Image (cartoon, rainbow, N blue to C red; front, top):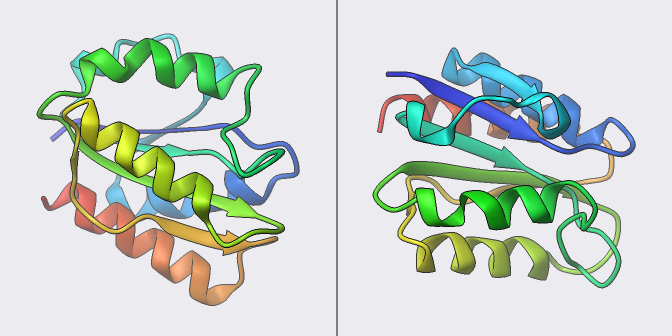
Length: 135
């Protein structure tokens, strides 16, 4: 199964999560600015973005990318992850609802890390990747 991990990270927290997800999934890992492929070429996709502003996706790179692929997610295996520094995770719940509304099949609960991912968060990210790869 061909799997991609695509993320945006401003501080490195979500990047660290992405690397753990990719390791768990045995997947290719791309910063959103480096991804030049087509999501339709992948069987499964893990998407990572931190909470920004009032608990929303990063709006200059990641949100436009996600909006551009939403129509290609129908039936695709998807997992979501990201870091945050405030709030209660509203951004990832809204994002999961949007992905499911687009037809994505969320194969595992999203993983969040408050700030820099600790050992528990890294373990959860690796498990998210493994669950995605084995779905």
